[in-house]
Length: 172
Image (tube, rainbow, N blue to C red; front, top):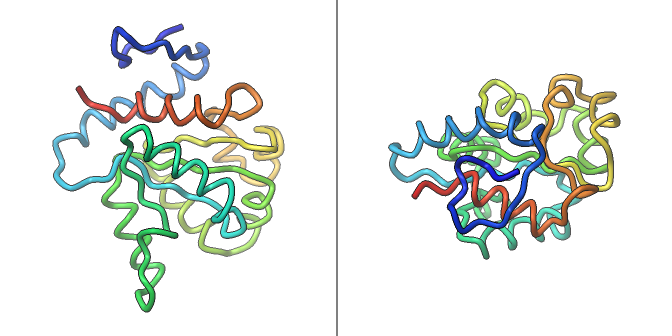
């Protein structure tokens, strides 16, 4: 089905579950659209994914006109990582969490991905993207994040997921 926030020319289709999951996020995107200088998306990912899967998603989102806070691009040498992440979280319309096997390993510890996830879970601005794992595996490690549905590369390509995120965050 087509999302109510999609342009009439859009060919992107969503499952009913995706519509239910993304509708409250879209409402928050609309509320936050009045705020100046916000990025569209904060990309939370495991450190191990930064040069491959997370970079691929970052590039796809950028190619679709989505502004992305991505640690690989936005944290300069010598800056305090946690402070930069904090600023990135506060200056983004939504957060996407790239859930991979590496991410599942990282959040079971007390790393930075776990801190980002905690901050994102506190607000209704979060979209999990599951890649090379399942929501069931996610629920085993993070019941709070796993209780949310989201998008999965087992159902759509990463490119289609990037298009869905672009539609979700674009205010006409």
